[in-house]
Length: 120
Image (cartoon, rainbow, N blue to C red; front, side, top):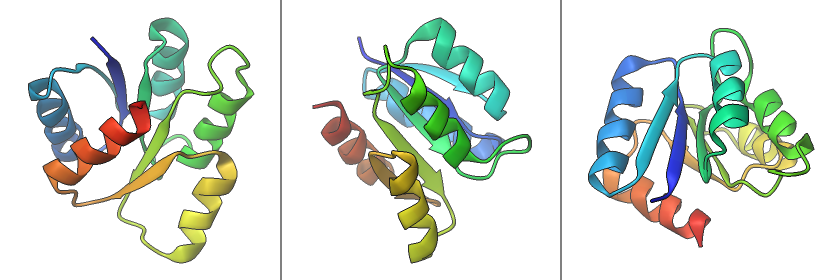
């Protein structure tokens, strides 16, 4: 069973992602802050990270860069989940090493398609 780490500070989006991914057969871990997310990444070795861009304690781009610096886990897919749809933020996310983007509010089918594609 693939493990997905959801790092999202907004409870409604975190719970929706947890429910959608759990019903699709994934084991879901979650964190509400960047620090909690980095700890869970180190401790749990998820197969994919769904990462909010704007967290209360860190910017998601910085978390993604830290994931990419971990040589043993640098290839872990990272999907940013954000309401920010500007081209500049998309470009910054790609520069930080993201695999893909999901724009909030997200469609559950779109989320699952992007997760499945990233895990291939």
